Structure formats: C-alpha cells, structure tokens
Amino acid sequence: MSNTKKSNNSFTNEKNEANIRIEKWIEFGKDYPKSFLKEFWSRMRKISATETKSVFEFDVTEEECNLLGNLHGGCIASIVDTLSVATLMGNKNGWTGVSTDLTVSYVSTAFPGDIIRVECSLSSVGKKFANMTVVIRNNGTGKVVAIGQNTLFNDLLIL
Image 1 (spheres, rainbow, N blue to C red):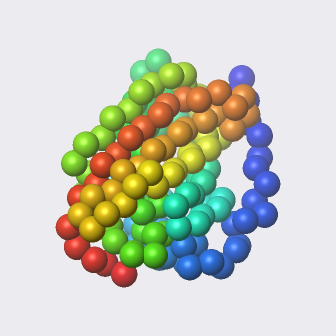
Image 2: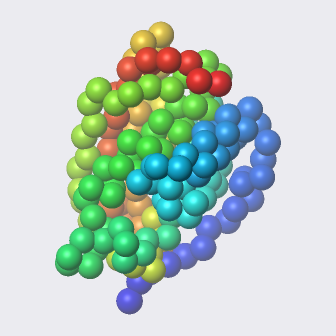
Image 3: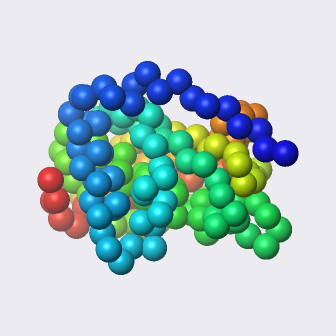
C-alpha cells in the first residue's frame, strides 16, 4: 500500500521571475523529441520556485521502479540531476550547466502510487560553478528517500 498525500499547490501559479524561467526550462524538456526524460517532464509538477529554491512533485509509477518494485536508484539520480538544473535556471543569472560531480545517498524508498516531493536548494553560485542540494521525500510519510549533491559547470547561457 502506498502512502500518498496531495500537496497544497498554492504557489504553483505564482508568476515570479524564477517560476517563469523554470517553466520555460520544463517546456523545453517536454518538447525535446528524443529525451528519455520526456515522460518524466510531462508528469512532474512544479509546486514553488524562487531564485534559490524550488519544490517539485512526481507520482511514482511502475515504469520508474526496479525489479524489486521500488523507485530505481538510476531514476533518483536522474531526478537529482534534472531538477537541480531546472532550479538553477530560476537564478537571476539564468545560467545552466553540466554536472561535474553528482552524489546521491539513498536513505529509503518509494513505491508505485507514492508521491515524491523534490526539494532543491542552490547552495552556492559563482561565474563558473554552482552547487545544489536536493532532498527527495516520500510525500505521504515525510521520510527522506534520498539526498543528492550536484556541482554544475556553467558551459553556456540559454535564456
């Protein structure tokens, strides 16, 4: 049985600059025809965003699970990577980057039917590097599923 809890989406439609930049990045991901994350982008929900933090939610399905029936570690790593970059796009400097170091500590798990909450924070940003922290929780239980750290190198300006 899954522990699911719907969130309060009161910040979803807030139109601050960070939200607008992140929404552009999400739409880019949804429209990119060859992305293996296309399905992920279409089901991921942005709950709130500022220039240094963002919160997303995602309903876990069997497609993201391993043979044991729980959320696959590779999927978790992709979530950390993808949503930390999306959060970085909310920064007023508007730069993206490529990951140079990505670490994930797997603490618990989630199952099909669970909603995971992804909390991304910009720890530091400079001209060439940014450091992100990502905490993934089971929204129903509040338990931490994984904690990720991502260091990104600013390779080009997109927006």
